[in-house]
Every structure is written in structure tokens, then in C-alpha cells.
Image 1 (cartoon, helix red, strand yellow):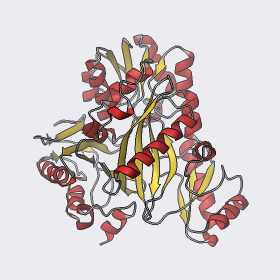
Image 2 (cartoon, one colour):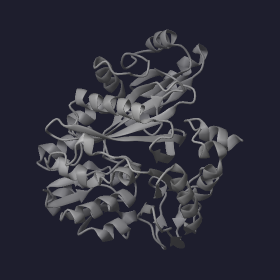
Image 3 (cartoon, one colour):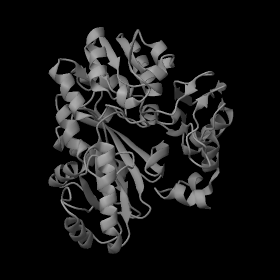
Image 4 (cartoon, helix red, strand yellow):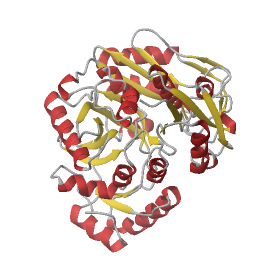
Length: 446
């Protein structure tokens, strides 16, 4: 097992990793920007290193500075969390070259699965269901036109190196394709440094279903059931739940089997998430593999009892999987609401000082956050400041606990999305489980 781990992240996920390391008897090093010098994750670690000014490109995403911090503190592994350098194949490769273990998949896995078009090709060759689309990266507008004509409109253009909804454009008719193609390429280039795009059929009102997988270095893979992440705004998830209200045992076994086959086809190792679209006819299609721990991993932990961060660390250290597929039992229902520092009506950032912070409690309630009274929400990073998670015997109890917990959650001094979540949970369609990726768009205009 590792002796000392550097946590190359900030906020709640950094604190989450530090706590897992402490339970495993591993020393921790926190990195931080100048803006985060007094942050909770920094105070929780055994050592700390400032890696630069507030801007993430100069600190948390500054590979030379992060690696320098790792070398001067003598760590034997780096946990990247999510975001920042977590899906940076070059960073993982450099870690491997200097003898520091990257807690995640190999650089080859990240590069292969990070190219969304290539990932589709790998999975399709295995005979698994893939969203209809271009066979690979589009090389020209003419290729885009031919692909769109073959599968039919509407279509969606996506960045091959994409994520977080960037580099995406929905096209409803042929006349709009050229402009959308150019816009998607330009955004992909500016965001990811790669203007590669591909094209898929655009499904109207699908569900976004993802499957958590664990894979060890001995070729063994298990899945931990599905998460329903359909409630999104501009491809950014707001509410997640497990199990999905529309996935029965038969579909769960099949989509889990396909997820396992997909990662086996890529010789994938460590923790990952296989993402699918589920249409109205209950047909599912592979979209991509996220090569990192997901924001919404706690809800899977709540229904399975598996600590995904500790399992991720053990797998990176070369340990075999601690569970078999037959050991995975889903118990009850879990829900997560992402609490963002945003105006809930305008979705604009709300930085500032948190003058009062009081988190909810009680049976079946979990809060993952690195905030407290007096914490400063700075404008340089993602706006998520907490994850509120509930667990109940069934969906009805989990939702009831979430409504109670949202009512108890007090954050003053800034605006948050707590009021929005309370309205969503009161919506009749949500209560009946009738949601899709278009749910929030309709909800906000009704």
C-alpha cells in the first residue's frame, strides 16, 4: 500500500480523498492555490504545498508545479480527484515515467477513452450497442453532411476530447449543419486544445444512464449498478439517483453486462463510469467512458456499501478486487443534489463569503462539502460547494429525506441552488420518476 499520497485537487473531493487515505493509514499532501490557503482540505492534510496563484491553469492544472510538490514531499502516488488533471493522459504518463503512481487508469486508457470517437469504435467492434453516428472523427464538413444524411436529423456534434457539455451543438436541419460544425470545432479547440468532432443521432428526451465499474490489474471487472443522471442543465448534472426508476432487474443485468464488456474491450483498469443513453423504447446505447471518479459516486456507495475511493486506491496499488459480481447487492435508494453557488433563477455565479453554514443531519443523510461558516467562495473554480445525499428504503423515502434535508440546509452570504432543488422535488413528474434530459428545460419554462 502507498505510504504518502498527494491529492491534486481541492474542495469536497480533495477532502473526501484525504479522509479515505487516513482510514487506510496513508499520509496525505494537499496542494492549494493562493486563494485556497485556508481551505478545509488544506487543514485536513498532513502536509501542504502552494502550487501557484488562484487561476487553475497556474496552480491546480500546472503540471510542473504539481509534480514539483510531489517530488519535494516524497509521495509515492497522486490522486487527481475529478476535473483539473484527472483525465489528462500526459499528466498520467509523466507520473508513470518518474515512478509516481497515478491513482486512476493508465495514461493509455485515458488517451484511448478520452477520444470519444475512438472509444465508440472500440465498443462497436465488440458488437455492443453504440449510438448511431459517424464511424470516427469527422475530417470535413462534407463528412458531417454525409453522416447526418445517413442517420437522419436531428443530430448532435460532439468534441472528441469533450466533456461538461463543451464542444456540443444540436442540429435540427441540414441548413444549420455547416455553422454548427464550425462552432463546435472552435469551442472544442479553445476548451480542449483539440478541434476534433464527431456526430451522433440526437435522441429526443432520452434518459442519461451510467454504470459504475471497477477493474483490477488481473483483468477482473465488476459493475455496481446504474445511476440515473437525466436532470441536467446544458449537459451539467444537477440531480442524480440510483437505482433508476425505469431500470428493472433484467435491464440492469444487461446494461451492466455491456458496461463490463466495453471496459474489457479497452483493457481498462481502475475505477470508471460507462455512460449510456436510454430511449423511450428502453433501448440503450453506449456514449462514452469517464476515466475518473464521478461527482455522483456517493449514491452508489450508499446503496452498495462499497467505498469507491478506498477501492480506487487499492486497485492503483495493485490489489485485486475485494468483491465479486455476486457480492454486489443494491439496498434501498439514494439521491444526490448538487448544491452550487449560483443564483437559482439566473444560473449566474454567486461568489462571496459564507456568513452562516449549517448542514442537515439525521438518519440517511450525508453531506460531502469542504465549506463552513467563514469560507470564501472564489470565482475561479467550479461553482459546486456541496453534495447533499440521502438514502432510504425506497425512492419515496429517499425523496422525503431529501426534501427535509434541503429545508434544514442553511447557507447564507451567497445565493445557492437549494431553492431550485426544492422546487424540482415538488414537481409531479419528478415524483413519478418521469424525467429525461429535457426535464429541466421544460421545468424552467413552465
